[in-house]
Amino acid sequence: MELTVARPVKPSDPFAHKPHQPIPHDIKRAVDFIRESVGQRISVSDLVEHCGVPARTLRKHFRRFLGASPLEFWRRSRLTAARDDLLAGASDTSVTDVAVRAGFNHFGRFAQEYRRLFGETPSATLRRNRPVEDNRSCRILGTGSNGDGTSDAISMFRRDRPSLAILPCHVSSADPECRYFAEYLTEGIATVLCDTHSLSVVAQSTARGTTFLNAKRGRPIARYVLVGRVAQSGERVRVGLRLIDATTNLHIWGDIYESGISDLFALQDRVAEAVMQVIPPRIRGAEIERARRKRPQDLDAYDLVLRALPFVYAAYPDSAKRALDLLDRAMELDPGYAPATALAGWCHAQLVLYNSSPSHSGARSRALVLSDRAGILDPDDSLVLTARAAVHTMAGQMSDADILNARALALDPTFVWGWERSGWLNAYRGRPETAIRHFNQAIRLDPSALNANRLIGIGCAYFDAGHYEDAVLWQLRGLKSQPSTAWVNRGLSVCYARTGNRLAALDSIDALRRYSSDLTISEIVSSIPFTRNFLDRIAEGLRDLGMPD
Image (cartoon, rainbow, N blue to C red; front, side, top):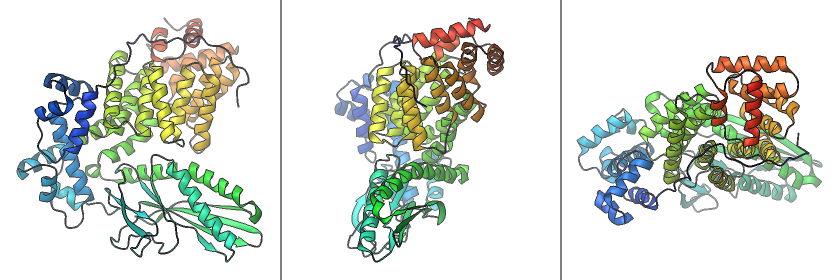
Protein backbone atom coordinates (compact mmCIF):
# COMPACT_ATOMS: atom_id res chain seq x y z
CA MET A 1 0.00 0.00 0.00
CA GLU A 2 1.81 3.15 -1.19
CA LEU A 3 1.09 6.77 -0.47
CA THR A 4 -0.19 8.89 -3.32
CA VAL A 5 -0.24 12.23 -1.52
CA ALA A 6 2.73 13.85 0.11
CA ARG A 7 2.48 16.89 2.33
CA PRO A 8 5.21 19.35 3.21
CA VAL A 9 6.57 18.96 6.71
CA LYS A 10 8.42 21.58 8.65
CA PRO A 11 11.72 20.00 9.70
CA SER A 12 12.56 20.47 13.33
CA ASP A 13 14.61 18.56 15.86
CA PRO A 14 12.85 17.84 19.16
CA PHE A 15 16.20 17.47 20.91
CA ALA A 16 18.52 20.29 21.79
CA HIS A 17 21.76 18.31 21.78
CA LYS A 18 25.14 19.75 21.07
CA PRO A 19 26.77 18.73 17.77
CA HIS A 20 28.09 15.20 17.93
CA GLN A 21 31.70 15.01 19.04
CA PRO A 22 33.88 13.33 16.38
CA ILE A 23 35.93 10.30 17.37
CA PRO A 24 39.54 11.42 18.00
CA HIS A 25 41.98 10.27 15.37
CA ASP A 26 44.56 9.31 18.01
CA ILE A 27 42.36 6.63 19.54
CA LYS A 28 41.75 5.01 16.16
CA ARG A 29 45.51 4.87 15.60
CA ALA A 30 46.01 3.45 19.10
CA VAL A 31 43.46 0.65 18.62
CA ASP A 32 45.00 -0.31 15.27
CA PHE A 33 48.47 -0.31 16.83
CA ILE A 34 47.31 -2.52 19.73
CA ARG A 35 45.74 -5.02 17.33
CA GLU A 36 48.89 -5.16 15.21
CA SER A 37 51.08 -5.52 18.30
CA VAL A 38 48.91 -7.90 20.31
CA GLY A 39 51.76 -10.38 20.80
CA GLN A 40 54.41 -7.78 21.66
CA ARG A 41 55.29 -5.84 24.78
CA ILE A 42 54.06 -2.26 24.48
CA SER A 43 53.78 0.64 26.91
CA VAL A 44 51.83 3.86 27.10
CA SER A 45 54.92 5.68 25.85
CA ASP A 46 54.89 3.47 22.73
CA LEU A 47 51.27 4.43 22.12
CA VAL A 48 52.01 8.10 22.79
CA GLU A 49 54.84 8.06 20.27
CA HIS A 50 52.73 6.26 17.68
CA CYS A 51 49.65 8.47 18.13
CA GLY A 52 51.38 11.80 18.60
CA VAL A 53 49.37 13.00 21.61
CA PRO A 54 50.24 13.48 25.29
CA ALA A 55 49.77 10.48 27.57
CA ARG A 56 47.13 12.32 29.59
CA THR A 57 45.06 13.00 26.46
CA LEU A 58 45.36 9.39 25.31
CA ARG A 59 44.25 8.03 28.69
CA LYS A 60 41.31 10.45 28.76
CA HIS A 61 40.21 9.40 25.27
CA PHE A 62 40.47 5.69 26.12
CA ARG A 63 38.35 6.17 29.23
CA ARG A 64 35.83 8.31 27.37
CA PHE A 65 35.41 6.16 24.25
CA LEU A 66 36.52 2.64 25.27
CA GLY A 67 35.80 2.58 29.01
CA ALA A 68 39.27 1.29 29.89
CA SER A 69 42.85 2.45 30.18
CA PRO A 70 45.15 1.82 27.18
CA LEU A 71 47.03 -0.98 28.94
CA GLU A 72 43.86 -2.59 30.25
CA PHE A 73 42.43 -2.62 26.72
CA TRP A 74 45.70 -4.10 25.39
CA ARG A 75 45.78 -6.79 28.11
CA ARG A 76 42.21 -7.93 27.45
CA SER A 77 42.81 -7.86 23.69
CA ARG A 78 45.73 -10.25 24.18
CA LEU A 79 43.61 -12.61 26.28
CA THR A 80 40.84 -12.57 23.67
CA ALA A 81 43.36 -13.30 20.91
CA ALA A 82 44.68 -16.23 22.95
CA ARG A 83 41.16 -17.60 23.38
CA ASP A 84 40.56 -17.36 19.62
CA ASP A 85 43.77 -19.32 19.01
CA LEU A 86 42.81 -21.99 21.53
CA LEU A 87 39.33 -22.41 20.04
CA ALA A 88 40.68 -22.58 16.50
CA GLY A 89 43.83 -24.57 17.24
CA ALA A 90 44.84 -27.80 15.56
CA SER A 91 45.36 -31.06 17.43
CA ASP A 92 49.02 -30.24 18.09
CA THR A 93 48.34 -26.77 19.54
CA SER A 94 49.68 -26.23 23.06
CA VAL A 95 48.68 -23.68 25.66
CA THR A 96 52.30 -22.60 25.96
CA ASP A 97 52.57 -21.82 22.23
CA VAL A 98 49.37 -19.81 22.35
CA ALA A 99 50.48 -17.85 25.42
CA VAL A 100 53.80 -16.96 23.80
CA ARG A 101 52.09 -15.81 20.58
CA ALA A 102 49.83 -13.58 22.66
CA GLY A 103 52.85 -12.03 24.40
CA PHE A 104 52.62 -13.78 27.80
CA ASN A 105 55.89 -15.03 29.29
CA HIS A 106 54.65 -15.78 32.80
CA PHE A 107 52.41 -18.80 32.18
CA GLY A 108 50.98 -18.98 35.69
CA ARG A 109 49.89 -15.34 35.48
CA PHE A 110 48.49 -15.94 32.00
CA ALA A 111 46.38 -18.87 33.23
CA GLN A 112 45.19 -16.88 36.24
CA GLU A 113 44.13 -13.82 34.20
CA TYR A 114 42.57 -16.05 31.54
CA ARG A 115 40.47 -17.93 34.09
CA ARG A 116 39.38 -14.70 35.78
CA LEU A 117 38.11 -13.30 32.48
CA PHE A 118 36.65 -16.41 30.81
CA GLY A 119 35.71 -18.56 33.78
CA GLU A 120 37.83 -21.56 32.76
CA THR A 121 41.48 -22.52 32.30
CA PRO A 122 43.22 -22.23 28.90
CA SER A 123 43.59 -26.02 28.77
CA ALA A 124 39.84 -26.45 29.29
CA THR A 125 39.21 -24.16 26.30
CA LEU A 126 41.65 -26.13 24.19
CA ARG A 127 39.94 -29.42 25.05
CA ARG A 128 36.69 -27.99 23.72
CA ASN A 129 38.34 -27.14 20.39
CA ARG A 130 35.49 -26.71 17.91
CA PRO A 131 34.94 -29.55 15.45
CA VAL A 132 33.99 -27.09 12.71
CA GLU A 133 35.99 -25.23 10.11
CA ASP A 134 39.11 -23.37 11.14
CA ASN A 135 37.81 -20.03 12.43
CA ARG A 136 40.91 -18.27 11.22
CA SER A 137 40.86 -19.42 7.59
CA CYS A 138 39.06 -21.41 5.00
CA ARG A 139 40.06 -22.74 1.59
CA ILE A 140 38.83 -20.85 -1.41
CA LEU A 141 36.98 -23.27 -3.64
CA GLY A 142 38.04 -23.36 -7.24
CA THR A 143 40.08 -25.36 -9.70
CA GLY A 144 43.26 -25.61 -7.64
CA SER A 145 45.82 -28.38 -7.62
CA ASN A 146 44.84 -30.16 -4.42
CA GLY A 147 42.71 -32.74 -6.18
CA ASP A 148 39.72 -31.99 -4.02
CA GLY A 149 38.53 -28.87 -5.79
CA THR A 150 40.31 -26.54 -3.34
CA SER A 151 42.96 -23.99 -4.04
CA ASP A 152 46.09 -23.30 -2.00
CA ALA A 153 44.98 -19.69 -1.50
CA ILE A 154 43.71 -18.85 1.96
CA SER A 155 40.74 -16.59 2.58
CA MET A 156 40.69 -15.03 6.05
CA PHE A 157 37.09 -15.45 7.12
CA ARG A 158 35.87 -13.30 9.93
CA ARG A 159 35.30 -15.41 13.01
CA ASP A 160 31.89 -13.80 13.57
CA ARG A 161 30.50 -14.48 10.11
CA PRO A 162 29.21 -17.94 9.24
CA SER A 163 30.82 -19.41 6.14
CA LEU A 164 28.77 -20.64 3.19
CA ALA A 165 30.12 -22.77 0.34
CA ILE A 166 28.12 -22.79 -2.90
CA LEU A 167 28.77 -26.04 -4.72
CA PRO A 168 28.16 -26.51 -8.46
CA CYS A 169 24.74 -27.75 -9.44
CA HIS A 170 24.62 -31.39 -10.48
CA VAL A 171 23.19 -31.70 -14.00
CA SER A 172 21.19 -34.80 -14.97
CA SER A 173 20.95 -33.88 -18.64
CA ALA A 174 23.23 -34.24 -21.66
CA ASP A 175 21.91 -31.02 -23.19
CA PRO A 176 24.82 -28.50 -23.39
CA GLU A 177 22.42 -25.61 -22.89
CA CYS A 178 21.26 -27.14 -19.63
CA ARG A 179 24.86 -27.55 -18.48
CA TYR A 180 25.69 -23.95 -19.32
CA PHE A 181 22.60 -22.86 -17.42
CA ALA A 182 23.74 -24.78 -14.33
CA GLU A 183 27.12 -23.02 -14.41
CA TYR A 184 25.54 -19.60 -14.81
CA LEU A 185 23.04 -20.37 -12.06
CA THR A 186 25.82 -21.14 -9.58
CA GLU A 187 27.58 -17.91 -10.53
CA GLY A 188 24.35 -15.93 -10.21
CA ILE A 189 23.61 -17.31 -6.75
CA ALA A 190 27.17 -16.58 -5.63
CA THR A 191 26.90 -13.02 -6.96
CA VAL A 192 23.78 -12.12 -4.97
CA LEU A 193 24.99 -13.82 -1.79
CA CYS A 194 28.44 -12.22 -1.95
CA ASP A 195 26.61 -8.90 -1.49
CA THR A 196 25.40 -10.18 1.86
CA HIS A 197 27.87 -8.67 4.32
CA SER A 198 26.85 -11.03 7.14
CA LEU A 199 28.17 -14.14 5.33
CA SER A 200 31.59 -15.32 4.22
CA VAL A 201 30.81 -16.86 0.83
CA VAL A 202 32.93 -19.04 -1.44
CA ALA A 203 31.82 -20.70 -4.66
CA GLN A 204 33.26 -23.73 -6.42
CA SER A 205 33.57 -23.11 -10.13
CA THR A 206 33.58 -26.71 -11.30
CA ALA A 207 31.94 -29.94 -10.28
CA ARG A 208 35.24 -31.82 -10.40
CA GLY A 209 36.04 -33.10 -6.94
CA THR A 210 32.89 -31.68 -5.40
CA THR A 211 32.81 -32.58 -1.70
CA PHE A 212 31.65 -31.20 1.61
CA LEU A 213 35.05 -31.90 3.14
CA ASN A 214 38.52 -30.52 2.71
CA ALA A 215 40.44 -33.65 1.76
CA LYS A 216 43.60 -32.64 3.62
CA ARG A 217 41.97 -31.61 6.88
CA GLY A 218 38.93 -33.87 6.90
CA ARG A 219 36.85 -30.89 8.03
CA PRO A 220 33.87 -29.25 6.34
CA ILE A 221 34.90 -26.69 3.71
CA ALA A 222 32.40 -24.29 5.30
CA ARG A 223 29.86 -24.43 8.09
CA TYR A 224 26.97 -24.27 5.60
CA VAL A 225 26.77 -25.67 2.10
CA LEU A 226 24.31 -24.87 -0.69
CA VAL A 227 23.89 -27.71 -3.18
CA GLY A 228 21.68 -27.91 -6.24
CA ARG A 229 20.47 -30.15 -9.01
CA VAL A 230 19.29 -29.20 -12.51
CA ALA A 231 17.08 -31.67 -14.35
CA GLN A 232 15.45 -31.50 -17.76
CA SER A 233 12.35 -33.30 -18.97
CA GLY A 234 11.36 -32.42 -22.50
CA GLU A 235 10.87 -28.67 -22.66
CA ARG A 236 10.82 -28.24 -18.88
CA VAL A 237 13.79 -27.48 -16.60
CA ARG A 238 13.66 -28.02 -12.85
CA VAL A 239 16.09 -26.63 -10.26
CA GLY A 240 16.29 -28.08 -6.76
CA LEU A 241 18.33 -26.39 -4.01
CA ARG A 242 19.23 -27.53 -0.50
CA LEU A 243 20.95 -25.69 2.35
CA ILE A 244 22.84 -28.06 4.66
CA ASP A 245 24.69 -27.61 7.93
CA ALA A 246 27.92 -29.34 6.92
CA THR A 247 29.00 -29.91 10.52
CA THR A 248 25.89 -31.94 11.37
CA ASN A 249 24.52 -32.89 7.90
CA LEU A 250 21.17 -31.43 8.95
CA HIS A 251 18.87 -30.16 6.22
CA ILE A 252 18.02 -26.47 6.90
CA TRP A 253 16.08 -25.43 3.80
CA GLY A 254 15.16 -26.64 0.34
CA ASP A 255 12.94 -25.66 -2.59
CA ILE A 256 12.21 -26.50 -6.23
CA TYR A 257 11.85 -24.05 -9.14
CA GLU A 258 10.66 -24.89 -12.64
CA SER A 259 10.17 -23.21 -16.03
CA GLY A 260 10.26 -23.84 -19.76
CA ILE A 261 13.65 -24.28 -21.41
CA SER A 262 13.02 -21.14 -23.45
CA ASP A 263 12.76 -19.04 -20.28
CA LEU A 264 16.00 -19.92 -18.47
CA PHE A 265 17.08 -16.33 -17.79
CA ALA A 266 13.84 -15.61 -15.97
CA LEU A 267 14.28 -18.85 -14.01
CA GLN A 268 17.80 -17.86 -13.00
CA ASP A 269 16.56 -14.46 -11.80
CA ARG A 270 13.73 -16.06 -9.84
CA VAL A 271 16.08 -18.55 -8.14
CA ALA A 272 18.66 -15.86 -7.33
CA GLU A 273 16.03 -13.57 -5.80
CA ALA A 274 14.57 -16.40 -3.73
CA VAL A 275 18.02 -17.40 -2.48
CA MET A 276 18.80 -13.79 -1.52
CA GLN A 277 15.60 -13.65 0.56
CA VAL A 278 15.84 -17.08 2.17
CA ILE A 279 19.48 -18.00 2.80
CA PRO A 280 20.69 -15.19 5.12
CA PRO A 281 17.77 -15.38 7.58
CA ARG A 282 17.85 -19.20 7.57
CA ILE A 283 21.56 -19.23 8.36
CA ARG A 284 21.09 -16.55 11.01
CA GLY A 285 18.36 -18.65 12.59
CA ALA A 286 20.57 -21.74 12.49
CA GLU A 287 23.41 -19.81 14.11
CA ILE A 288 21.13 -18.53 16.88
CA GLU A 289 19.86 -22.05 17.50
CA ARG A 290 23.44 -23.37 17.57
CA ALA A 291 24.38 -20.76 20.18
CA ARG A 292 21.21 -21.49 22.17
CA ARG A 293 22.16 -25.17 22.47
CA LYS A 294 25.63 -24.43 23.83
CA ARG A 295 26.44 -24.77 27.50
CA PRO A 296 26.84 -21.39 29.26
CA GLN A 297 30.54 -22.01 29.93
CA ASP A 298 31.12 -22.64 26.22
CA LEU A 299 29.75 -19.31 25.01
CA ASP A 300 32.09 -16.74 23.49
CA ALA A 301 31.26 -13.13 22.58
CA TYR A 302 29.87 -14.11 19.17
CA ASP A 303 27.58 -16.74 20.72
CA LEU A 304 26.31 -14.26 23.29
CA VAL A 305 25.50 -11.75 20.55
CA LEU A 306 23.62 -14.45 18.66
CA ARG A 307 21.59 -15.24 21.77
CA ALA A 308 20.90 -11.53 22.23
CA LEU A 309 19.73 -10.81 18.66
CA PRO A 310 16.11 -12.03 19.03
CA PHE A 311 15.76 -9.78 22.09
CA VAL A 312 17.45 -6.86 20.32
CA TYR A 313 14.95 -7.06 17.45
CA ALA A 314 11.89 -7.69 19.64
CA ALA A 315 11.15 -3.97 20.18
CA TYR A 316 9.91 -3.82 23.78
CA PRO A 317 11.64 -2.82 27.04
CA ASP A 318 11.98 -6.19 28.77
CA SER A 319 13.57 -7.71 25.68
CA ALA A 320 16.08 -4.84 25.48
CA LYS A 321 17.04 -5.43 29.12
CA ARG A 322 17.48 -9.16 28.55
CA ALA A 323 19.62 -8.41 25.51
CA LEU A 324 21.76 -6.02 27.56
CA ASP A 325 22.52 -8.76 30.10
CA LEU A 326 23.91 -10.94 27.31
CA LEU A 327 25.70 -8.10 25.51
CA ASP A 328 27.38 -6.88 28.70
CA ARG A 329 28.78 -10.39 29.17
CA ALA A 330 29.98 -10.38 25.56
CA MET A 331 31.76 -7.04 26.03
CA GLU A 332 33.37 -8.34 29.20
CA LEU A 333 34.69 -11.40 27.38
CA ASP A 334 35.85 -9.44 24.34
CA PRO A 335 36.10 -5.66 24.82
CA GLY A 336 37.15 -5.29 21.19
CA TYR A 337 34.07 -6.98 19.71
CA ALA A 338 32.22 -4.18 17.94
CA PRO A 339 28.81 -5.87 17.29
CA ALA A 340 28.27 -6.45 21.01
CA THR A 341 29.17 -2.84 21.77
CA ALA A 342 26.99 -1.36 19.01
CA LEU A 343 23.96 -3.48 19.88
CA ALA A 344 24.30 -2.64 23.57
CA GLY A 345 24.19 1.02 22.58
CA TRP A 346 20.99 0.42 20.63
CA CYS A 347 19.39 -1.40 23.58
CA HIS A 348 20.03 1.62 25.81
CA ALA A 349 18.51 3.78 23.08
CA GLN A 350 15.43 1.54 22.96
CA LEU A 351 14.83 2.11 26.67
CA VAL A 352 14.64 5.83 25.90
CA LEU A 353 12.32 5.38 22.92
CA TYR A 354 9.97 3.10 24.87
CA ASN A 355 9.87 5.39 27.95
CA SER A 356 11.41 2.66 30.11
CA SER A 357 14.64 4.18 31.35
CA PRO A 358 14.84 5.72 34.84
CA SER A 359 17.04 8.43 33.33
CA HIS A 360 16.53 9.32 29.67
CA SER A 361 19.61 11.57 29.64
CA GLY A 362 21.77 8.86 31.22
CA ALA A 363 20.60 6.13 28.85
CA ARG A 364 20.98 8.45 25.86
CA SER A 365 24.53 9.37 26.87
CA ARG A 366 25.44 5.72 27.46
CA ALA A 367 24.05 4.76 24.05
CA LEU A 368 26.12 7.45 22.30
CA VAL A 369 29.30 6.44 24.14
CA LEU A 370 28.84 2.80 23.08
CA SER A 371 28.11 3.89 19.51
CA ASP A 372 31.36 5.87 19.42
CA ARG A 373 33.23 2.91 20.85
CA ALA A 374 31.82 0.53 18.23
CA GLY A 375 32.79 2.98 15.49
CA ILE A 376 36.39 2.82 16.69
CA LEU A 377 36.42 -0.96 16.94
CA ASP A 378 34.89 -1.69 13.51
CA PRO A 379 33.89 1.16 11.16
CA ASP A 380 32.95 -1.12 8.25
CA ASP A 381 30.46 -3.70 9.52
CA SER A 382 26.84 -3.38 8.33
CA LEU A 383 25.37 -4.57 11.64
CA VAL A 384 27.54 -2.15 13.62
CA LEU A 385 26.75 0.74 11.27
CA THR A 386 23.01 0.07 11.43
CA ALA A 387 22.97 -0.13 15.23
CA ARG A 388 24.96 3.10 15.42
CA ALA A 389 22.56 4.78 12.98
CA ALA A 390 19.65 3.73 15.21
CA VAL A 391 21.37 5.22 18.27
CA HIS A 392 22.00 8.54 16.55
CA THR A 393 18.42 8.57 15.27
CA MET A 394 17.20 8.21 18.84
CA ALA A 395 19.42 11.13 19.85
CA GLY A 396 18.03 13.34 17.09
CA GLN A 397 21.35 13.43 15.25
CA MET A 398 19.75 12.72 11.91
CA SER A 399 22.60 13.69 9.60
CA ASP A 400 24.97 11.31 11.38
CA ALA A 401 22.32 8.59 11.27
CA ASP A 402 21.75 9.14 7.54
CA ILE A 403 25.45 8.71 6.78
CA LEU A 404 25.78 5.57 8.90
CA ASN A 405 22.63 3.93 7.50
CA ALA A 406 23.60 4.71 3.91
CA ARG A 407 27.03 3.19 4.51
CA ALA A 408 25.48 0.03 5.99
CA LEU A 409 23.19 -0.49 2.98
CA ALA A 410 26.01 0.25 0.55
CA LEU A 411 28.02 -2.55 2.18
CA ASP A 412 25.06 -4.95 2.20
CA PRO A 413 22.01 -4.03 0.07
CA THR A 414 20.27 -7.19 1.34
CA PHE A 415 20.56 -6.33 5.05
CA VAL A 416 16.96 -6.47 6.30
CA TRP A 417 17.53 -4.64 9.57
CA GLY A 418 19.33 -1.85 7.66
CA TRP A 419 16.19 -1.23 5.56
CA GLU A 420 13.99 -1.40 8.65
CA ARG A 421 16.04 1.19 10.51
CA SER A 422 16.18 3.34 7.38
CA GLY A 423 12.38 3.20 7.37
CA TRP A 424 12.31 4.54 10.93
CA LEU A 425 14.91 7.20 10.16
CA ASN A 426 12.82 8.51 7.27
CA ALA A 427 9.64 8.33 9.34
CA TYR A 428 11.28 10.43 12.05
CA ARG A 429 12.53 12.94 9.47
CA GLY A 430 9.07 13.49 8.02
CA ARG A 431 9.53 11.49 4.80
CA PRO A 432 6.53 9.13 4.95
CA GLU A 433 6.66 7.89 1.35
CA THR A 434 10.34 6.94 1.60
CA ALA A 435 9.77 5.40 5.03
CA ILE A 436 6.98 3.13 3.75
CA ARG A 437 9.04 2.13 0.73
CA HIS A 438 11.99 1.12 2.92
CA PHE A 439 9.80 -0.77 5.41
CA ASN A 440 8.28 -2.64 2.45
CA GLN A 441 11.78 -3.45 1.19
CA ALA A 442 12.60 -5.02 4.55
CA ILE A 443 9.39 -7.05 4.38
CA ARG A 444 10.14 -8.12 0.80
CA LEU A 445 13.64 -9.30 1.74
CA ASP A 446 12.37 -11.20 4.78
CA PRO A 447 8.67 -11.96 4.24
CA SER A 448 8.69 -14.65 6.94
CA ALA A 449 9.28 -12.05 9.65
CA LEU A 450 6.48 -9.47 9.55
CA ASN A 451 7.63 -8.10 12.88
CA ALA A 452 5.77 -5.49 14.85
CA ASN A 453 8.47 -2.87 14.45
CA ARG A 454 8.02 -2.69 10.67
CA LEU A 455 4.23 -2.70 10.85
CA ILE A 456 4.15 0.01 13.50
CA GLY A 457 6.68 2.03 11.52
CA ILE A 458 4.41 1.97 8.47
CA GLY A 459 1.54 3.09 10.71
CA CYS A 460 3.60 6.03 11.99
CA ALA A 461 4.41 7.06 8.42
CA TYR A 462 0.70 7.05 7.55
CA PHE A 463 -0.01 9.12 10.67
CA ASP A 464 2.60 11.64 9.56
CA ALA A 465 0.92 11.88 6.15
CA GLY A 466 -2.48 12.40 7.73
CA HIS A 467 -3.89 9.01 6.66
CA TYR A 468 -5.27 8.14 10.08
CA GLU A 469 -7.41 5.14 9.10
CA ASP A 470 -4.42 3.47 7.46
CA ALA A 471 -2.32 4.39 10.50
CA VAL A 472 -4.82 2.61 12.78
CA LEU A 473 -4.79 -0.54 10.63
CA TRP A 474 -1.00 -0.85 10.49
CA GLN A 475 -0.31 0.00 14.12
CA LEU A 476 -3.05 -2.35 15.27
CA ARG A 477 -1.53 -5.11 13.13
CA GLY A 478 1.79 -4.51 14.83
CA LEU A 479 0.26 -4.55 18.31
CA LYS A 480 -1.66 -7.76 17.61
CA SER A 481 1.41 -9.50 16.20
CA GLN A 482 3.38 -8.58 19.33
CA PRO A 483 1.15 -7.48 22.28
CA SER A 484 4.22 -6.57 24.36
CA THR A 485 4.71 -3.47 22.17
CA ALA A 486 2.15 -1.62 24.28
CA TRP A 487 4.09 1.62 23.77
CA VAL A 488 2.39 1.85 20.36
CA ASN A 489 -0.72 3.13 22.19
CA ARG A 490 1.01 6.51 22.45
CA GLY A 491 0.13 7.07 18.80
CA LEU A 492 -2.62 4.51 18.25
CA SER A 493 -4.90 6.26 20.74
CA VAL A 494 -4.51 9.54 18.85
CA CYS A 495 -5.14 7.77 15.52
CA TYR A 496 -8.41 6.38 16.90
CA ALA A 497 -9.44 9.85 18.07
CA ARG A 498 -8.61 11.37 14.67
CA THR A 499 -10.88 8.84 12.97
CA GLY A 500 -13.75 9.64 15.35
CA ASN A 501 -13.57 6.37 17.33
CA ARG A 502 -13.28 7.92 20.78
CA LEU A 503 -14.27 4.77 22.65
CA ALA A 504 -11.38 2.84 21.09
CA ALA A 505 -9.11 5.83 21.77
CA LEU A 506 -9.97 5.77 25.49
CA ASP A 507 -9.40 2.00 25.63
CA SER A 508 -6.01 2.57 24.01
CA ILE A 509 -5.14 5.25 26.59
CA ASP A 510 -6.08 2.83 29.38
CA ALA A 511 -3.70 0.25 27.86
CA LEU A 512 -0.97 2.92 27.77
CA ARG A 513 -1.53 3.70 31.47
CA ARG A 514 -1.24 0.00 32.28
CA TYR A 515 2.06 0.00 30.37
CA SER A 516 3.34 2.99 32.38
CA SER A 517 1.03 4.46 34.99
CA ASP A 518 2.95 7.72 35.55
CA LEU A 519 3.76 8.51 31.91
CA THR A 520 3.27 12.14 30.86
CA ILE A 521 2.95 13.90 27.52
CA SER A 522 6.26 15.71 27.98
CA GLU A 523 8.05 12.39 28.59
CA ILE A 524 6.56 10.94 25.42
CA VAL A 525 7.41 13.84 23.12
CA SER A 526 10.94 14.10 24.55
CA SER A 527 11.64 10.41 23.88
CA ILE A 528 10.69 10.08 20.20
CA PRO A 529 12.58 12.15 17.58
CA PHE A 530 9.72 12.87 15.15
CA THR A 531 9.19 16.25 13.51
CA ARG A 532 7.61 19.05 15.52
CA ASN A 533 4.42 18.80 13.45
CA PHE A 534 4.11 15.09 14.29
CA LEU A 535 4.79 15.62 18.00
CA ASP A 536 2.36 18.55 18.24
CA ARG A 537 -0.44 16.37 16.90
CA ILE A 538 0.47 13.57 19.32
CA ALA A 539 0.55 15.97 22.28
CA GLU A 540 -2.74 17.58 21.30
CA GLY A 541 -4.45 14.21 20.93
CA LEU A 542 -3.12 12.81 24.21
CA ARG A 543 -4.10 15.99 26.07
CA ASP A 544 -7.63 15.74 24.66
CA LEU A 545 -7.80 12.12 25.91
CA GLY A 546 -6.90 13.15 29.45
CA MET A 547 -3.20 12.37 29.68
CA PRO A 548 -1.32 14.77 32.00
CA ASP A 549 1.25 17.18 30.62
